[in-house]
Image 1: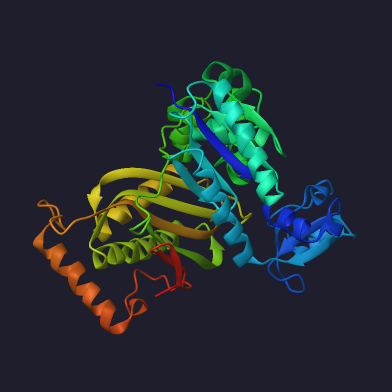
Image 2 (image 1 turned 45 degrees about the vertical axis):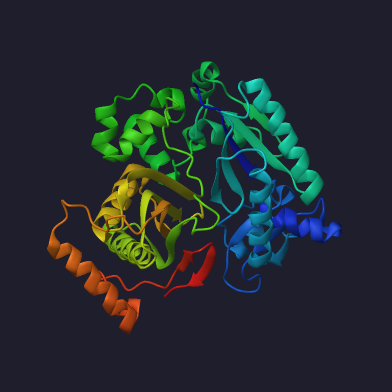
Length: 401
């Protein structure tokens, strides 16, 4: 059965919430920032501001030059997260399989609640109406046969749009798109494609052979090859059980944006070890790993994979590194996150696979014991000494341990 996947993206989420709270701001060019009076950047701009070129990640000083009458507000992340959680609960009423992709977007598997695309479009319209009625916010809904194409559909119909792309329509739509419309292709990749292959639109990218892309982009070349053809087999990663932790994860904002792969690998190793340690403390094993990358322009990309059950540092690190290599676009990285989901908990569950050596078993248990006694940050990996991140356990955020 062909899948039917929806991508729901809230329109100018933070700015729209502020306009709902303060009706006199509707129709005006506004932006939300963490520190309107400091050396900060734009988190979200209203569509009125975007007409002047104001966009996320832009320094405040630049935004004010582009739009002298721009109203900049201090964001309230706690409020935004609460609304995001309430929206997620609403979306779960329409499908049993919803992936919380970011604070303002989700993926939803409609395969078993809408047998065909016409029914999915009707469901999408109903979702949009409920969001507007309950939250006074608009969203854009893209529907297609996988996550990649549904996200492209939501991009193409923003703001406040609804669009479906069938497999039969995909190639005709793809070949005319700028390559930047594909999620995961950043500015640096866009420039390299132009420089190396004279490629600007997806139709031109489709003509480049896989081995040529791999030669330039390494493992990321395979992603480019598949994405240009609308190929994406990444699963919808859902929460497991409301009574148990939905996921165990750790994210970290780096002290400085970096494209140094050795630094990135050290951070991934540290994050993987934290996640694995928490899994063992809770007597869990995970069957899915998700990597989150936020680039210097604040674009955030998430990539996941289902795996055999594990709670070992080395397994989680190796999968995280593999996911990173599959999607990294060469731009500077601002944030990294590693999370484990599809958790299994059983007293009879073996903590270590028979193939794992006794030496590794003793090592990770000894490190867990040291962390309990002396604190996690007393043990470092490589040369990295990064800022503490937010740890997620039992659906609550706990400031780094």
